[in-house]
Length: 378
Ligand SMILES: [Zn+2]
Ligand SMILES: [Zn+2]
Image (cartoon, rainbow, N blue to C red; front, side, top):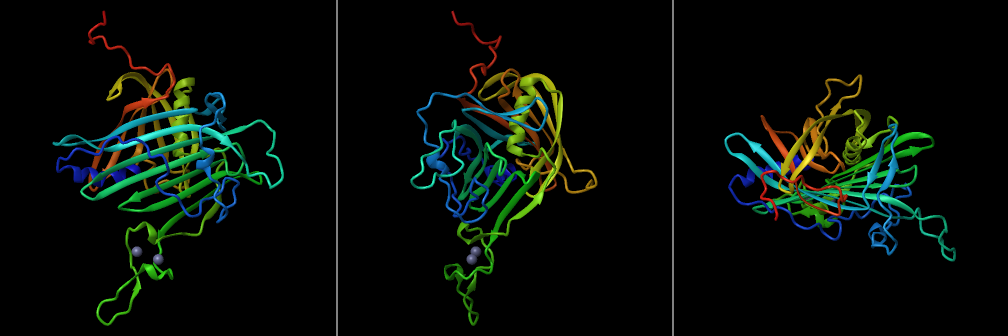
């Protein structure tokens, strides 16, 4: 819910202060869980596979995009070897007009993949080096002591289980962690999900607060501190085959444009539930954003409750945008340029636009159109 968390911030910004805007990506993840699911699919505890150590730039020659086949005919996920896209988040409010409420950065890269460390005394396997994809979507902001860092990481692995690990961590004034893994286990499409919550009844004395007069010292009744969080029991379940998470869906939208695929349908996994997602190729238009003016084509994302569950709550996915959303992608390369949707705030539905402001290491063909009105260089 990146945007829904940015929104209170936006309202705070009504006071008129400039937003923190685009800051460089941190060199390390904002939050490291004490226990993260390991990439070999073992669920608990376990030695943390140091993905960051593996992330050290390799001296190997560039290998290009990582192409991961999807279950949709003719379509693959394509993870750039290295790419950074920085967006500004704008709310359009009646009377007040457009207001910048934060920044949103998507970085993608590929890394060497190791399925596990070789046992002592054994040489590392000589098989060709496999790669994994790493995508991070990160929203940030801050105002008057309220800070927000929300990061969603997706690791796409060259194995059946888990094939994808998504970690959704929010830190700052409020703290929350969610993790999803999915893939194929014993021939079945499965997902694993866990979330954390306030550790109301834990025994840690440092979480205890002084009672009032005559009452005893007791565990804090509820707070937003990151230290006062514990993982709930994970939930493993069977899911429809071919399901994708929201981050992967955005990268699939890029391929729709690149390959001119009219429409696709697939189950969209969100936490422990899924939606019937339809993505349709839309109109072409020239889209102007802070990074320039680009020749784009729209892809419309329309998530609906699965059959038999109509009337369920409306979809509120990755961005807190409800209902449908549109992504404008560069027609030639599929690079996302603008994302548009509606965010509900109290009784209001506000237009939100996420606009490309900076880009680096993108496909060479990704360039702004030359504007006719621009003075010619002589
Ligand atoms: Zn506690
Ligand atoms: Zn607490």
